[in-house]
Length: 299
Image 1 (cartoon, one colour):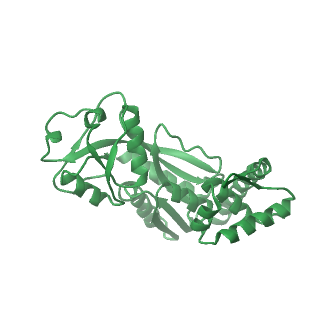
Image 2 (cartoon, rainbow, N blue to C red; image 1 turned 135 degrees about the horizontal axis):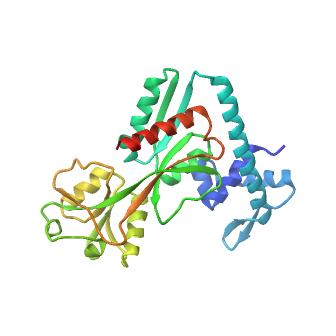
Image 3 (tube, helix red, strand yellow; image 1 turned 90 degrees about the vertical axis):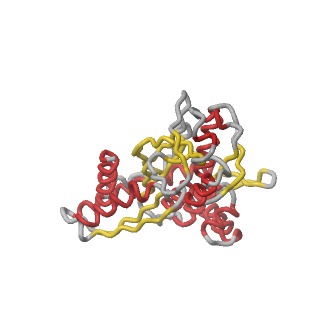
């Protein structure tokens, strides 16, 4: 019988690319991760990792093993769904753990969570703020049950380990200082601010900005970096740079002007739900997904 924890280590190496990064995420030493992979290789009787210069790569045997393990994991989630349905009957109960990017929590995630716990007294929900990469890692580690993530529409997050569903497409507006020339000069498209300095609110949004600007034919110059939207908007209000801001999020910072862009390459991010493959029929997950869709329809 293959140790599932060691399979998880191999999946993590596939996902993160290096032993050191897996060790950092899992709060282990690199030697401990390497030892688990070696023991898994011994269990299956084949080499799973090989050196490529100073880095490592998975062998064909490792990819074959992972392909089967993904199928087994999805089948197990499906079995859990059947068992949960039998156990719960009409009485929905249990704990649901959610991960979400910051701006989706007040506008989508919290509303659906409150409705779920209000209607079902036997249900508890926990919410954890996390970016896209962290959310998917938390799903794989079974720390959360469902993730709400965002991605540029031209960069699909296809991964057979997850079932995903699109909630909505969220246009991005340009935000500039309210007392700046940009606020009154008739900016219509991103190309009009190609020479401006940019504020990076966090790395997920940076990727979206880079993708949107690339479609307009330029590379944005990021001069400021922060992991907090309020800080980013304060920098914009002070005339320190411009930024793209989600349409779904309100602006509570004074001194900022929101500009709706036009043109052929409008910046948009896609908001999706991710669950482990096979788990979408579990009663708590399927009920919460329906409530999320109701919130989106009411927006």
